[in-house]
Length: 273
Image (cartoon, rainbow, N blue to C red):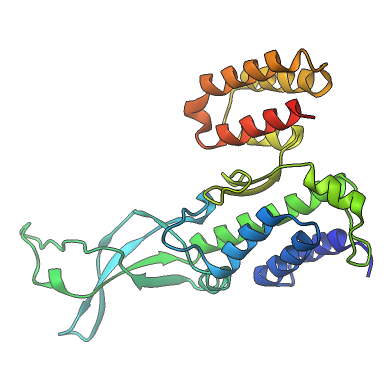
């Protein structure tokens, strides 16, 4: 059977299996490594995000147009262009189905007033409405989740976590447990499915996160230097380095948003090593 992690990597790269199948394989690996947060994220992707939970940013999509049902003409007709950001809560299998369509129509989440040429409400104002968006919007979600799975398996492999013949030894389980996993700006925090990127907290993932957030090079280097020092610093020096890291996060909070919490956890984890 070989390495479970490597096999999943190759399957992702080949692109022959559905994302639903890839996520099921991911859940199996996460369960064997006792990574409950990864399992939770996979469950959300497979089953859909309930109304009382927030979705990861990569599940945002934008509507293209509004249609109303014209009972007199017996069909749907264009009622105006829209550009409204909505959340895709459907299971990933439904997202995959949407991604294959040229256009996707669904019930409108709210009523939009239809105005006639004279500026007054149209008689169609109370007619059934639906929103229409392109399948490309959902393809982007598929690509984002697929990229996160590839990133996650690559990080596992870097840490020597392979799962020969689908079995993970205690050393591999410990190596997996010693790192935090970030699920959510696609690039959220452990135990917090509100955000959802599958990135291991380490130097390379933080570096990429800073680039994604468009942090200036000089400021990126400032944080990276703090993290470099923290990695090998004696215990008595770590509190001051952690404090510098926290000050850096506060200084850049407008750019970082929710990612500031992820970086804070990374710095805290390094300080406890």
